[in-house]
Length: 464
Image 1 (cartoon, rainbow, N blue to C red):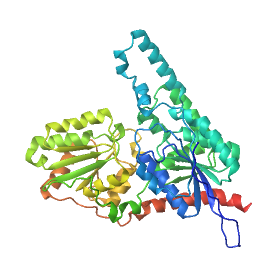
Image 2 (cartoon, one colour):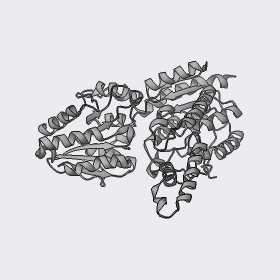
Image 3 (cartoon, rainbow, N blue to C red):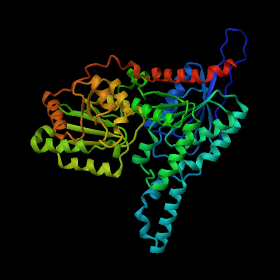
Image 4 (cartoon, rainbow, N blue to C red):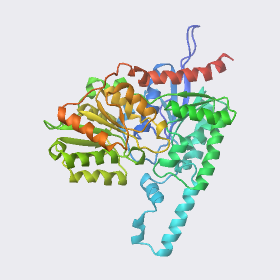
């Protein structure tokens, strides 16, 4: 187990001295892990430290994840302490094969072996509740218990998914009676329905519902990334007769990420003259399907092929095989597709600045009205035109506050096509009408909401 140096506050020397407080952050996804979900805990550590909170991060030494972004480690204060117990999970690629019952096994195994393997995989999936990260649970609880016995902490914050982090937080709260905050980056129920490798059988739903009730009943506060999700969780807490506080803390954007030094990256090519560049950043999967945009581009090509040739669509980030297949349809159009794999966050910001317009996607599926894609706030901070293909809901409401075109429903292919025609005809994009009020969505401002919650939970304890 490797840890960073743990710095303790200096001894009290005067009545004016206010000791720093310490938070245990349970975050399976933390640098060098990459991805959108990592930004939230990283920015919290960064801004909590500036405001008098030191953080101990509980995270695995060998996480089973799809992407790595070591550049994010520069954001972490040097004084941050780490607890890095190992997880017994297989690699991400192996987990993906297990979830998909990979057909490549057929080339070298007999029918009986395939059947046995299939049964073993199904049994493993049923046992790994609420997610494969449960294989990290015992090492994480044991390592964190040892640290908490050595070093006083004031509160525990667990962020999920994966939801094993909540179970770890609940176990540590029971042992040490520290205030516990659960941070729902995504609703548990929605994640079980849409996330890759999620288990959607009846048994898993039953077990995970009981697990969720268990952790909610032990929470002192619950945080969510949208107001609609916060309200839904508040209803669940009320049904459990829990006095836990609830608050909405949006993901937001970091002003430091949008300083002039990030405006250009040499790895991001300049667009050709006369070309309109539309950029999408983030994962393309079933909850952010690119199908409406691709269908509209196909329609544009059928009607105005010369105009379609002026369009460049850049997709930066991971794509599921299903989304890759949809993007492949653009080969039959005049639109130029630029397919970029996952890259570090600094390069992502440079892609935003290189764009004429940015694309925000959210599929019209049950529960999407309570989802706000984290990238929305960085899009607003970049002050670019926006093609927002969203169903009615909280994300659409936020978009409509700032952008002249507003959100377009995923089913409105004609409306998306008209958006392209207008931009390509004008030869220039339209910026947002009003971004003057987006300061409330800065990461620093959002972290202040977390600090207010921590004060409510910890200051009375200190006074006693």
